[in-house]
Image (cartoon, rainbow, N blue to C red):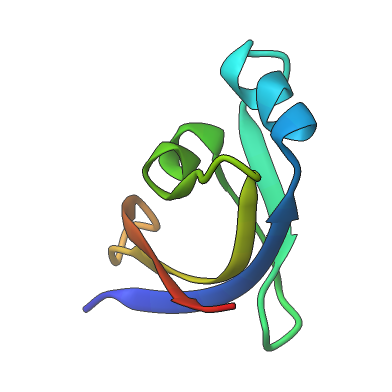
Length: 75
């Protein structure tokens, strides 16, 4: 069974550079239900726009808490 968590992300292009340059390798975010999660920064690559990463995203993890997917679900 997969766990689906929703997070609101607002990451500017400047902050994304820290992830791409390897200075920061994990993102810490709050879920919409108030939990704090940590996930690998490299998963953001598929959702980056020219203005950064902004909106509500669904992150899916497997039963071992391993990242499966990310997709945008709202603004």
